[in-house]
Image (cartoon, rainbow, N blue to C red; front, side, top):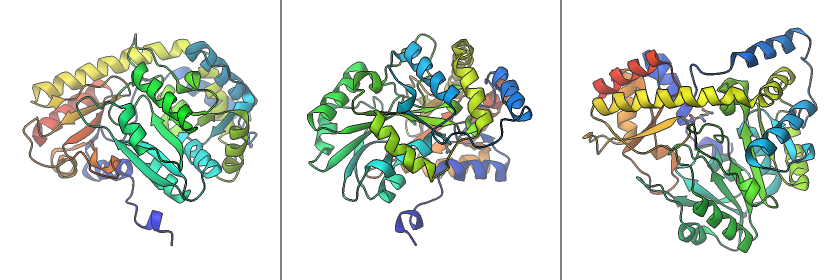
Length: 377
Ligand code: GLN
């Protein structure tokens, strides 16, 4: 058996979602909206299913979708992409896996920024890579050039950056992003920029892509599930320099071969209507205010959240002595609310006093979640 997977726990997202079902708890854990998606996309997907778009798409993605992604990023982020730089995958995690498998050799080193999305480390390990972790700390979660540089060695091949950052909700500053680019150029590194939260930002906020700053070495990861609040659709992609995209496409063809053609068509339809996105931002911003007001009234201390639909709670500052895992288990089993503890997102010295809550929820879900959080205190 393979030790990477033998030693690996079930993903904390799956663990907490299963516990929520088992205990009939409100699920503010795993990040998925229970409202807010554009209905137009559902109608278009249904139309495509019933009108016969149900056989394999081209492995690298439906041409209409790859064109639509290029236009979308040209308009919104000033990127200059061509369809041969794109690979459409079954969810963003498959794009990440394809890139790791296609580019890394045993002994290559990859730098990840903790708290890091829990998919990176196991996939890097399975690709044979050695992981170097840069640990961010609350409340600022600042990413410094010094910390990044200290993690880089002559064997480093790849920096894995996630911006906006899950689970902290940080939107990295220009200075932080420029430090990433400067170091990547100085040490000739690839940058995997996981930008799946690029559109989940408050009204008025701006997102800057590392692909615009260092197109020669950046692999950008995107996700229709995040852009349109349809996480179960599993339509993601990567954009990369042409040769790297071709290499990742070879890994992708033997992982899932192709994403569903009807959903790809509906996503292309959505990307060509970016006006669908602004109302989602407004709705999630109102949901965020409802959750944070409710939690504050219940006596919880919150960390700042600049982007994503996540809000972190500081348990210890809120007068709770339990560590994050013990709190999360008690909250789901006894109080009836699922949250996500942050300690599983560290390889090394973990933060043990923080949990993450998802606020992309209807008023009634938030109110029920807040009432349960009040009981958990
Ligand atoms: N991205 C989601 C989150 O952060 C989880 C995705 C998953 O469970 N595969 O909650």
